Image (cartoon, rainbow, N blue to C red; front, side, top):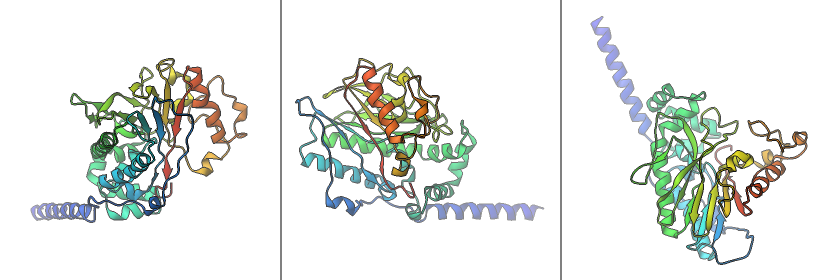
Length: 351
């Protein structure tokens, strides 16, 4: 019996050691790689006239898994866009730059095994990330306070690293280009701003889809904005932000209201910015053209608002419904007549 116990202990130790050696093998190191797609130049569209009060710039960067492989990859691909804007004299000290929803969330893939970035599907990539981080995954899975424990564990086990890369990237870009940055959003466990003004997480709490605004000095401008109305795909692993948020920020371009994606559909999300903002910005994820142009099937996991014509379900596209019932309708009802909505673009595995 004693021999069996010793043998079993040695076997487990060897297995554990072997797994840890394997898990650390072939992980990508810091490197600087920018897709050659961008060497051909960037396109942009302008609206409005220059009043001398600053501008609001929406960047929809085309992102791929390789762009999330390391912190330097992520920072450098975004810098390409900022440099292009600077070269065109579009970026000034009065500029507010807005990036898409979830732009920081895919940092969950940072510093993983090389083969992860070349998987055929997102499910395969995420599965491989889990396999390479089994012990962290199971700890977070066990304490997950939500229904979709798999997604919660995946994001929470990498949350500290994700938050650090995200904050460092946008803080440096804001300082380097002397502008305010609305850094899209990132899925983090109950993020908050600590006493040093830095982004911190409560790693045993629920995950919130969180947007962070950085000043031209690279500091986080409070408050953090947490999505109030998570859509169907988010509801299993992310929580609803509080309706008493007051997401209005003072910028050189004016008072800015900030809502995240689907929140822009709901009057309740506007109540604390109504009449207080000169303009509104909305980072969104969006979807593939096939989804955007497909028949609209309803209000993304929530009961339709009173002024929504439900007879239009299946009769207009999702894109048409977005124009009809999102910012374009809701913001003017809240006395906000200028705004920008940006969407995520790129190819993340099969997404």
